[in-house]
Image 1 (cartoon, rainbow, N blue to C red):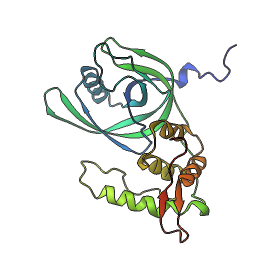
Image 2: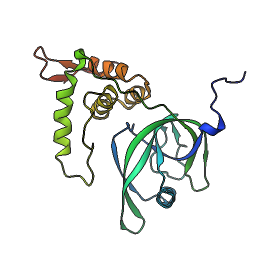
Image 3: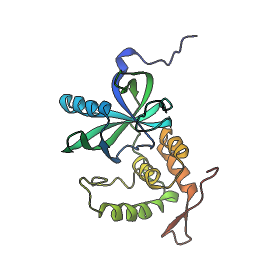
Length: 224
């Protein structure tokens, strides 16, 4: 039967895809060192056209292609990125700093002869602003301290540009999910949730507040 929820062709865009063994949350900075020909060409095209690309989470295969290796497979939901800085320290090597912008869903893919994946993707709706409820307020000072510590380290670009949206469920939950040492599959499940309060509630289940509410400790994730 036809899928009534199928996107119209006008809602789809073509995007170069970069499969990585990570989950990139919106707002996060991703530094990359590129040397494979397919990605050097991809960055050259993005730079020339002023466009970005999409980061998707590997489920099979390796980040660096090797002849005879298992074919790459990846999750259907990824993150569109914007390129913030490019450096070329030597021939055949490109350093790229990019930032996650918005999530998308892949509807079809094809692989070019040089190995680069391209996808027909549909952007997912931006998560609505939602204030952090009182019972989850204890998550704010803990992550604020972690972000401040990490931001004080030397970096070509800020990890998270100010001002920080600490009282927004989406932004706060993204930062917690980005930094918590969770299994990749669990990070991806949290990433795909479309309800920011639900995601933050699940973070709250893993991060236990003290009786004073002034600090928190991570509880072991279930089924990890």
